[in-house]
Length: 402
Ligand SMILES: *Cc1c(COP(=O)(O)O)cnc(C)c1O
Image (cartoon, rainbow, N blue to C red; front, side, top):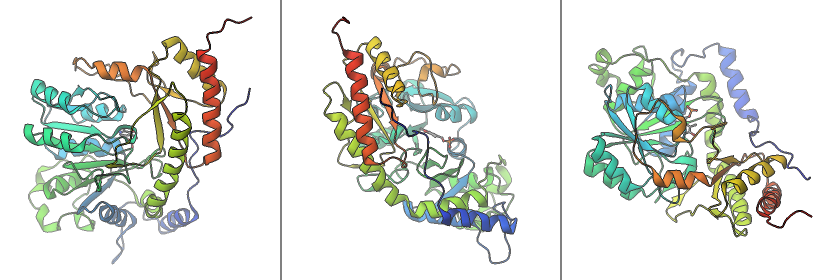
């Protein structure tokens, strides 16, 4: 049997420019972000400033991870212990985990056919729970109907926090993802759009939220060493009433990220070329339903989702193992036991939310997911389509063996 030989988890190497920048930091020994010499701005503060400019917002904080950015966002927005926090039923485990870590109780919201959050169910969940916060995941890079979502949040007095782990570089209606809510949270973990191993970025236009986030992230009263934060003299009150919950980014990671940030736009084009190629190939298969991409959504196609709604569970299981045998590790969200990156809400047993989620149950049952690392080319996409097609033919073949 023909097998696809490349790895779906192999990212591109770090560029020479980024390696040199990181080595230069190591030569100074000043890895801690606040360890600066006279007149030095530091890689972390420069990264924050450059990322803020790219989003068109005044404030950005670099921190330890995307999940940590989410925790910080909730705390900085005033979450109190036991508060209900809305989140998509279809998201990744660090999202409910961050809500839990910040002391909140996650309340799950159902999804629409295109896997984005259902604004009507959002309104219903808000009424039922009285939640004042919503962590909106642009899960797998799909941006929902932001007008409808924002208007539900405004009508119900809900603070919107965007989880942009899969939408760094994406826009909706010309506006960068992460600038619709009070706070935007991004990840620079290896499988996202920039790679520093681990890392997170938090963006906001709200000076008090930013002051709290800076102090909480562990600024040791050195907040004057930020370039994309409110003026130091405005910290006078906040600094004495805000706990330190260390989770800073360091200069080494920031040095790796700055040259990558400059490449984000070209990465996006390369990702989307792969995405469109794979999508076009899959669209020729009658059983495959790809997820529609609205005109207003300018996405970054670093992964691709599709549904096989007419297949039985047995056929789906055969298809998945047929892909596996051909070197294609498809993620199937309908699998009984969570594996690898878990995105099934029923595997987060610590949640107390018991809302019925009929769409999420039905849609996730036949939803599949492929990562698209930039180490692939368009020929690889064609090979993947071909091999998945073979696996599908085999899985759905009803002619008896003779
Ligand atoms: C990766 C991811 C996060 C958090 O990222 P980490 O940096 O790994 O903490 C949050 N939400 C989603 C949807 C993600 O995929």
